[in-house]
Length: 363
Image (cartoon, rainbow, N blue to C red; front, side, top):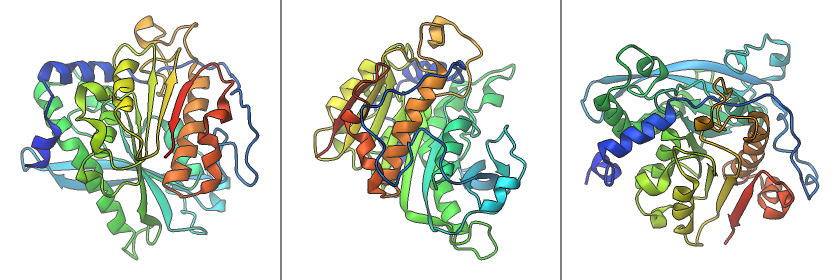
């Protein structure tokens, strides 16, 4: 059976259209500062994972050309890469539009470095979002690789014609290999003495993450043989119960994030998927009772109930703090293999925090 036919069972055009609609407006939030309520102290020798990491952040772009799995035509992937930069980058000009110092010298003091591959949402998605998430992980020593998914890009879908159903389905079928191809291409650069990434990337420590349509990609890769390059997966609002095969095939630690006010990908979908994961691998379910589909984006320009970005909803600032706290602890534990961060994944670490409902299964 081909990769395409394995990934498409249960996918109807209506269902796929619904998922795309849910991804069109994903950058939402507010600016008020709220504290995370912690009931345990930070373990000795590690940082609070919601605080900035020890590295300055560099960012660059690399374009790869992949063959489309559906048409055989060239598929250009202009990929954004965030990475830990050398100490010299602290004096470099920070480009706030890209979340780091452009083309800064990479940090090589602890290389090779662990990797996170990011899959953006559909419609309103593009590789440079969310900046707060990618740059934060890079500050903790990860190289974050974010390819585009042609057919689902913001510029394509915001044009006069908008996203087409044909382009949407084509992108859905190409997305998993967009991610694995880009990872393989970056690892080849790590073997090239002429590349700034020479000897910088650790292909044995790789995580996968994404939001909405990209969260769906993450869940799919967590349970197929295509996921073999990855060590752990974190899916944000992935609509798993509707779009992904039964979870008994998941082969790696998995964290799912969901919001009770998400009207696009209901938290009940994610709960059903999570409940089917069994107990053979670590898995985590983080629910924001006041959070919606757009809690994961950088900003929220439209505070309407449909996006759960109103004054009574979870603020973007608080959502980001919680997302970074758990995502950093998860990836430091299961990708970077830093056991010092495992304590943050214990439900007791934030047992008094009112803005989460958190379940951890630790075999």
